[in-house]
Image (cartoon, rainbow, N blue to C red):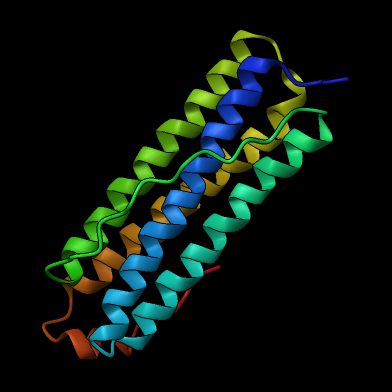
Length: 160
């Protein structure tokens, strides 16, 4: 017996797709950095990709725990041809803001249909998105202080 509404179940399945596409996007960015031997940036974006996959699995686990049905939707191909570091950083920030909007939509759906049993999960993701936006905006600010991409790469560290 399902303890999750069909509407929220479907919305969570759609969010799984968003999270997996985020992982693909960040993997493409990581490869761009690897190809230019900017290894710290490559590692930073690989870790982002891993985290996005973990996020998808959090939604999957919640659906299963609530007796719902998981459906993995087809993933769209993600951009992989970047021009420079700033383009990637800005695209990452824009993408994180987009994901924040998607999480807010989930919050609104759960509130609208009074499905409060999913609030703890959604609240966790709302907090996570604040951190994600802060991490990438901090990386953008840091990059603005460098004139040399190689020099910047050596000062990139992953913030948990």
